[in-house]
Amino acid sequence: MSSIVGVVAGPEPGGRTAAAVAGILAGAEKAGDSTRLIELSQTPFDEVTAAFAEADAVVFGSPVYRAGHTASLKALLEATERGKWGEKTAPLQGKAAAVVLTGATGHHFLAVDGLRSVLAGFFAVQVLSPGLYLDHSGYVDRNTLTDDSAELAAAHGRALSDLTTAVRSSEALRSITPVV
Image (cartoon, rainbow, N blue to C red; front, side):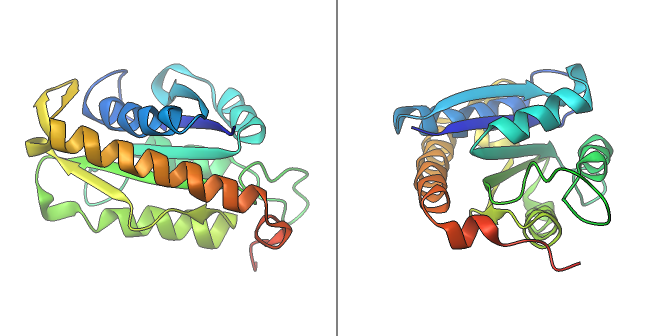
């Protein structure tokens, strides 16, 4: 059993991104993992980075604004140490992660690649590919995924569970560090 934390980087609690992250966590729970959902708008960064350190995997969820993840998620990542240049911790290194972004239309789906690249390259996180992007058509209402979207999110959760098991069982994957 793994421990997976989901971070929702929306400007306020609840909403579409929280529903998407919860859908992924539901799939991980069905695979036997324990999960926790954190609303970044309600939680200090030091508590979030402490949760990273304790977790085996992280789901990063953000709405897309101006073709990228939110400023609050960017600020969190900038405040997260990575064990380089005198930093004493690297709470994301050697972890598995999943990315889910939400937006009004499908036009911004490539924003998933930017966040996935930051996590993999800058933090040495093993990121589930291809990532998940849900636009408004993936929801019944502001807080409810459609059946198809719920099934897709749950599949990502189960895949994250498998990836987490693989990363936890591989000393080589856990020991990879950021290049710079």
